Length: 284
Ligand SMILES: C[S@@+](CC[C@H](N)C(=O)[O-])C[C@H]1O[C@@H](n2cnc3c(N)ncnc32)[C@H](O)[C@@H]1O
Image (cartoon, rainbow, N blue to C red):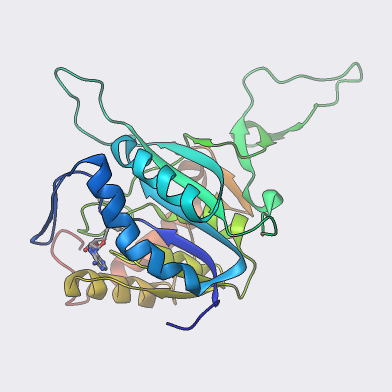
């Protein structure tokens, strides 16, 4: 790979737990061994980053310690985002694991952060009006009162892809398009370059394409590569991103209910694209 061509590096490797990826097993290890494994390939990626690049690194609570240590070694760690997963099995003798982390770091003090592009539209519970009856910071819409809020490092508006969503595939740990849209919009500008070395079902490249960024992904499994290619093809027909509409992110499940346009687009994709032989019966 060439040097200094990447504006955004998104990394979603196998987490530090035992998991099968289409027959390839990743085994849980000690924190020290996992840190060492991450470093064995991460250190080789550093040269591809531009001096103003951002890095987002995903993990669960167990992997987070290693990620923090690793990022501190090479970059400026700026934040840890925690996002809530709605899906997942309950545990009998432990707290259900319902969160994941994304560590945010930059190469230098100079980096892109477009906060205006990643604001969240939330329902207002107690709408406040001034003495003239004018709404303060909120607007009245067909289906309620909403306020545009600054994005925080706790994301509770993410929906993990489920069977009826057009973005869903058979990949066991597919990231939601909405999650990638936030990161790409905040940390890149149109035309910037996004690299994902663990591409899986292609989410990063698909969202980069939908948002007019350049992209490159690496994936070890051929079946997942095919899923990614198929999704990239679908992005030619459908540039919508569930939960992101009219230039804002909507609270979980509000956009999907609101948008007749989203439902119509989904139906179009289901009827016209999902007849491809690359898709499994589950996806159809
Ligand atoms: C956590 S998943 C990524 C999921 C992805 N973000 C998505 O939305 O579909 C990790 C991926 O890394 C792949 N992988 C594992 N080892 C790899 C390697 N050495 N090089 C490239 N990909 C690898 C696995 O096959 C798996 O698809």
